[in-house]
Structures are given as C-alpha cells and as structure tokens.
Length: 254
Image (cartoon, rainbow, N blue to C red; front, top):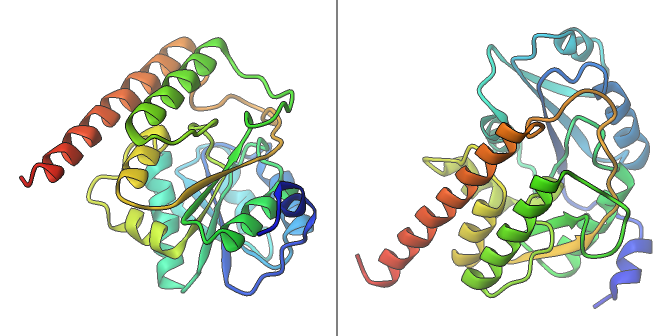
C-alpha cells in the first residue's frame, strides 16, 4: 500500500466514471471560476451543477457554460436535498464515484487527486478531505472550531474512530454509499458529523486524508453568523442522539 506522500504525488488515472456534484445557491460570482479550475485539474470527470433555486444570475450563467450538466430546482429546498438530486442522477447514469465539491471556491480541485487515489488504494467507501490532519493554515470561526471539537469527540466516543474534520463537505463516495444516501427516507438537513456516525456504525469504511482548502471566493456561507452556527450545531448533535438511539434498538433486537 502506498504511503501518504505517494498518494499526494501520484496522478489519478480514471478507470471508472466519476462525477463531480456541486450544489449551488446564489454563487454567480464564484461558480465559473470553480468550474474552470475543475476542468483544468480533473479533465476526465463529468461535472453536475445542481442549482437550488438561485435568485441571482446563476441559472443564466449555467445555461451558457459548455461541457457542464446542470439541473435546476424551481425553488430553494436546501443543500442536503440538492446533494440527493445529484446522487440520484449518478445512479441513473451509472457513475462509480462521486466527488462532493462546493461551489464557493473553498475546495481546491487539485486536492481531489488525493481523495480519488485513496478510495481506490484502500477500497474505502467514503474518503474525507481534512483541513485539520496536518497544519494547513486554514482558519474558521470560533463557533465552528468548537463544533468541530465537539463532533470529533462524539465520533471518537461512539464509533472509536478519529475523524479530524467531521464537517468537511469535500468527499469522495463510492457507488454503494451514494446509492444508500439516495434511498434514505430521511437525508439529514446538514449531512456532516451525524452522517459520518451513521455510516461508520452501519459498517461502511471511512478514511480521511489531509487537504488544503481556502476561504470562499465571494459572498457568505450558509453557516455564517452566530444564529446559523448555533442552529447547525444543535441539529447535528440532536441527529447524532437519534442515530445512536436507533442503533441501540437494533443491537437490542427491537
């Protein structure tokens, strides 16, 4: 098995269909640059943009971009359901891997090679791009740092696994995972640490690799602000409690 440095340096050689899915909501100022970077760094993947009811000029921009698949929700239904639209598309069109990618410029396309190499090398189900496994200079708000520490501790105590960046949306999923997600009757509003707990407890193999990220190019994120951050943290913890209760009932034979 290749060591960490090998995974960083080796180029990804695609032998399976890979789809980048990018949910966007009012990312007109960012999305073109994001797509250009992906095209340069990952020329062999397909790109699917799910416009989640944007009210800026995102839809106009997407209609005029070449070599990009775009789907439009008629109104905003949220990040999680936009992802689920992408999962269903990937199933219908026989993709083997999905790269979850943000439309705000946070994720760096060249770093996706590490995730793709890892999922193939280690036969993982999920590979998470981590900002915090190594020092990268990435910083986020105090509340987000606190949330990351809390979620990391919860995963460690409940799953006996260290996940350094449980809120990272930069992930590669294999077909079994995104098929599972697409068929879930309730896909969580914020699919982060709570979903990691559920997948580990369900027997899926999760790995993490260090990646570099940057701050978004322009605009505000969905968790910016004290109220949004607090609401996010409370919902994640509540969902984790529900997941743990459900799995306890399963182990008890109910």
